[in-house]
Length: 311
Image (tube, rainbow, N blue to C red; front, side):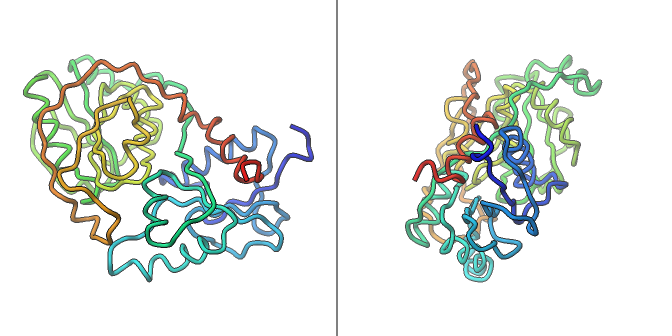
């Protein structure tokens, strides 16, 4: 790539010091773009591309290409107009939109109409984390199968159903445990083989994924959860449902459970998920193929959109 091909890119509405899902992905993407020779600049510098995560935090500079990276819209009926106001304004004025999943693309186009753009799933580095934490090593030495789940918990994430599915699976695999990572768990059960860690560091979370045999992520209408990306990056297959965008990123690297009731993009309270019929699932032997979530490949797809090569 020649110097003239390099772009100055401004990431709007991003906090690179935050470890939330969107900000973590933004940091990974920015690092990859920098390694490719592009520059990440602040809002006061001259830039070629204004890349806004969800909605803008500043006014785009005249002449800059405006790209919206969209990870879903608010679809509770009482929030749809108020919470989406700035998101929709950017959607209408952006030169292109990057959706996290086909689910997100179908959702926004159902409500707001067609838009030029592309679906690009999130990505992560594929380096396998060495397990060195003594507690994790002890757990690994105690149990034949380790199941994990992780989220900033609220009802949409279906922690209750994750636990219920684990207990059904445990009937067939008695020497197994469930590690529940993340803040604000909304369902508690006292069980010697179920451990709540609370919020833990990102590195420790990756170690846990690296040590685990399966991740359970039954969240309803999730967009493109970074915890699932990270699980796959560490070679840990995923049990999910067919709602939202999660199964798109799991692909053949796991087990997909069908929802009992289909969702047709109607406005609804996502913190009141539909009931799901849970039965013990067969756990196939899976050789993870995760090259499609390599952050370098994801960054190359972003560049095609940001530079206009795909238009």
